[in-house]
Each structure stands twice: as C-alpha cells, then as structure tokens.
Image (tube, rainbow, N blue to C red; front, side, top):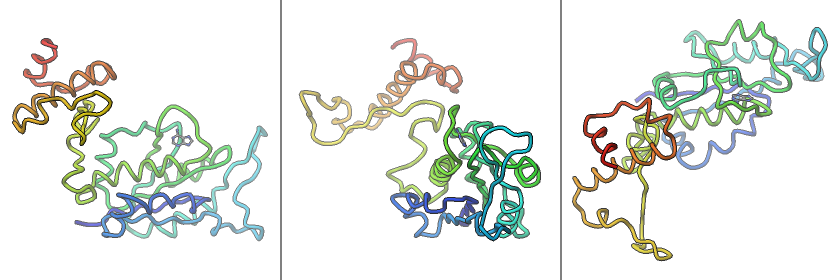
Length: 240
Ligand code: ADE
C-alpha cells in the first residue's frame, strides 16, 4: 500500500503537533501517512519575513500575499500535480463521503489561510478544491486541515486495526452507530443489554442494526431521510 502524503502550507507548523499522537501518529510511524508542514514564511522575499499586507480598496485586517504561498506550493508540488485544497468556510462541507474519496489520493497539498484572507490570484492559480469543516468561522485553516487529515487518514487501509474498523461506525453507511458497552456488566444500576451478553451473533447484529436505525431517527432524522435502507430496515422502523 502506498503512503498518503499531506503537504501543509501554513504559517504555524507547530500547531500540527497533535497529529504525532495516537492513531495518526502510529500511522505515520508505520509509513502509511506522512504529514509534511511547510512554513510559508520561509518563502517570504521580504527581509523582515513579512507574508501579509493591507487590502486594496481598504477594509479591515491584512491579506496574505500571493508570492510566498506560490513559492511554498512550488517547493512541494514537483511534477506529480497533487490535489490542492484550500481550507475555507466558503468551501464544500467535509463529509464522510468526501473523506473516503480523498483517501484514494496519493499526495494532497493543504493551504491554510490566516488574517482576513488570501490574495485571490494565488487561489485561482493553484487551488483545485475549497473545503470547509462546517458553517462557522475559525481563526485560520490549521484546525480544519488537522480535522481533514485525521478524517481522511483513518479511511486508508491499515490505519485502523481490525478492532477499530471504519465500516461499522457513525456516518459510514449514512446511519449513526449503535451504542457500545464494556465491563462491568452493571454500572450505577444500569445493566448491559441482555442480548450482548448472550453470544448469539445473529441476534446481536439484528439488535445493533435496530439501535442504529432508532438512534438515527431520534438524533439525526435528516440523515435517515437520505440513508439507503433495505426492506428489512424499513420493516424494523415501522415496528419500532
Ligand atoms: N477557515 C476558517 N473557518 C473555516 C472553516 N469553517 N472551515 C475551513 N476553513 C476555515
């Protein structure tokens, strides 16, 4: 399996330290994923290493200049024409489906903006896709880039071990995941559902599917409308 490489163009490479921990950290050690941060400031042509300037036409805040971003991009793009994603609240909202599609790429460049924005001309020149992580505004693209890296990397073969498979969990098939329990069998007077203690795998599967359907109807009815349901699922929902 080839590695999935993310090249992150950012002014704050130290913000990406959390990706060295846990599952994504382990995937990097195993060579399944690589996160390479490139500091845009290193490409400033200015002797004071400035990367932003006042906006034409006035208005508040500063705008990131095109040249350092373009040169940072050139330093990682090479000849393979990787997909370039700009993290922006104006982008297509990240979903499980988009994460799955992106996980098939080999090299993704993530551009993180800051200040009031990025000069439009460099976006026109290099960006293939804008991605948002939700309809709210953050101070920069770094946290969204980390969210994207986490969510896309875990869809790559070998990143999750068999006990953590992506296939059974929330959003994978358009439904929310069933509830999970571990020891002890009773906690604060609440018992683990009997069916899970019985070891009848068919019964357990049926119960889990019922719970998934029920939860989705209760917590996210909007998802249930879009989910592809079998005749069996529809019967379960009518019955419940
Ligand atoms: N930058 C600022 N807010 C953002 C968001 N919601 N998604 C992606 N990038 C952003």
